[in-house]
Amino acid sequence: MIRMKPETHGDLLRAAKADGYKRLGEWLDNVPAELVYRLSSPARLNNPSLQRLSESFCEYANEVARALDEMRLIVERNPMLDDDAENRKGFQNLRHAYDGLIRRMEELGFEM
Image (tube, rainbow, N blue to C red; front, side):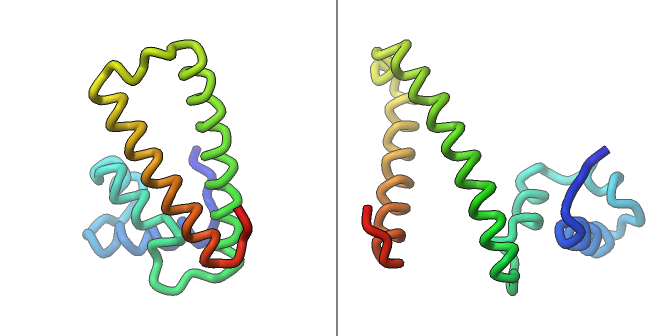
């Protein structure tokens, strides 16, 4: 069983019907996960409510914090991670995303 907010269910159901499916489960079985994420992400909707955006931001922030804590443990246990080109690319992408987030928070008036 999948539990989701009614707004998300509605977004996904409309997308499924637009693709010609009568049941949401059949549609979910036949679409790429990235598409489901894009349709269910409030940040990607045309007119999301401020409350929905705020709730989603808090959820995503908590997930990111947990993921970063796990990444810290991985780096502490393997300081040679930067010897691998893919790992260096991952670190570079992470740094780029982090710098962008810090710039945006400063633009919004948060002191970092």
